[in-house]
Length: 357
Image (cartoon, rainbow, N blue to C red; front, top):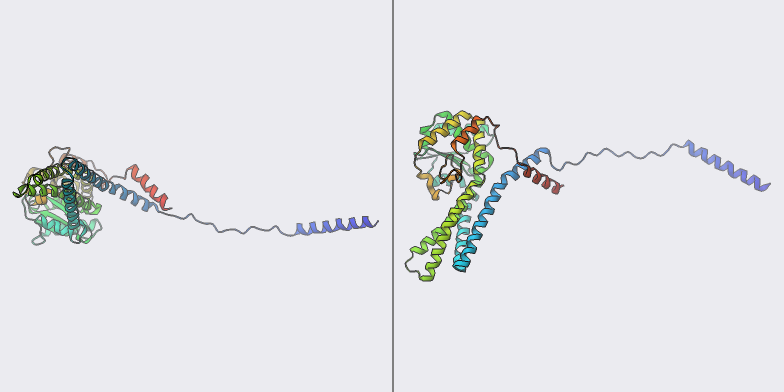
């Protein structure tokens, strides 16, 4: 009897607890605020990175080829004339390259020094040139570079420097040959080089050529020394020969990206001024055929940076595309600016973005 009563009380207690649990609301999980995914790089930053990678490749290729040329000739001299000749070659090339690069590109005032090396001056610059430089720089949304005039009959122009030291130089022959609209188109072309940063790569290529020619000059001076003995004569001959050969091979360094840069700068001129005016200027300059004098400074190390340059022994070795090709590109109505970055540049930019994240 007592056991039955105890079991009844237990059942009532269990029923009461179950009813109480059913009346209580179910616990709610705390809602977390919605979190937006963290953005590492924006689309604009990725596109800018793609352009930077694509623009850096020609310079990387230049320095890699330069290193290969120097290493190859150094090893050849070591095996042929011994360590002294190899050491003289490597040290002369390194010192000449470092000095030219520092003087023309790294140290402040590099652009002005390059213009003055060609005989350029800021005195007596025609108002048409100053106005064209200021107008096209404003269109490109960049500070106006300094305007220089080079007193030579050769119709040509070039840009040099970076940052506050940027300059645009035109020759007196160009001013006399072209009308105002055509002159503005040529100046806009040079401003396009500044806008794209091509002048830095041009200065680096000129420094490489200067370094390679330094070895040849060192060998020539040693050969001209009448007090040398037979061992010095062999070293001097080997150094001069290697310097001449490497200088010839170094001319190929100027081809890295130079033709693409010319087409891109032509497109900028077509955008800011007029494609027909630039095409007319190209035809007039080609027909002029004036000899090169002042612009041949430093053995023509900056020839690849000029608006017009036909110094290649064949059309395959020219730093600039032919006038026909440039005029055809202008008349085709291609969109202005550089071509879209290649696929490898996009993949490289994505890899960098993933490493940052």
